[in-house]
Length: 390
Image (tube, rainbow, N blue to C red; front, side, top):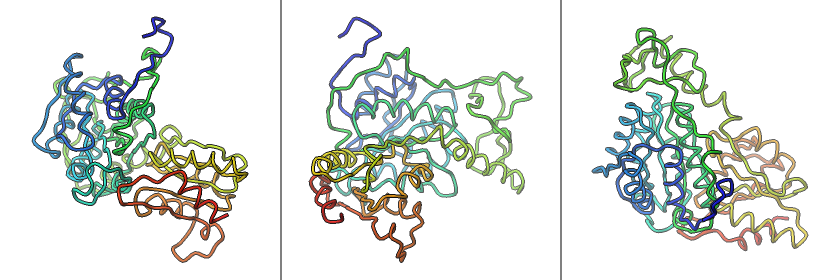
């Protein structure tokens, strides 16, 4: 351990541990969850560490109870999180929609595994990317982050907690079986230098308080149960105090707020990595664990005289349309490797204006590389595809 507090502390850490410790660094107060491979280590670490800081850990009877518990604890003023994998995430989707509708901050971690159903519990997958956006019924924009290293798992866990508190919504942090279980040396920051978003409490008298103001600015004050402020919580369409309404004008305000508080802050929410894209003629678009192989393939290609670059979204949703379009529009070929049947590929085709039968040059040279058998995509497989298409 380094004695100088201004220096970073380097430790060997597992991805799931990094997520748990990142959340703790961000002020996690309450974790409720149900064990499921490959996310269980997150719950195990929180069960040991949270009580040391006065926090609470509950092992619930199932995932529906878990998401309900963290919503309730958040309404009472706690910073909350749960962790699961594909089957459990499916059970949580109604609760995620409720958290978005009631504008209750919380974080759900999905360490993805092969599916559908119970699928491949000990194998990696990236097949929950679309579910992370569309899982809840109704219209409600999603904030979804996806790291590609143990270090980023720590950093984006903090960021997920911050974004949940700032925009009063349920934020999803994606990982996968390999990323969750791999170990890497990471540098833990001095937390005195890390920005942590703290929930803002209202300063208005209780009789003036509106839990859902018509034109909120973010961060937005949020009262908690037991503080003397009266507001109602319901999944029904509701007015500024939270009471159910069928009025079209009040419902329109509600739905507009849920949409615009995300879409009007794209620049604050979206993160995108550009690697060797300055002179690239071939671009690889990859996320999460697959982006590590993609970056290695870029370096192999460069050694062989092929100008290849990589674009990686750390924020999957909202999708970085404008930045992606700008960076990819002049590429001769776009390669999209992913551990699913083409979920990110569909987004790239949409952003680039490609219909399913498009004959444009750009659309013709969007090339997919997909695996759904539980095995990782290798740098060599990506490089071999590069050689085929150039």
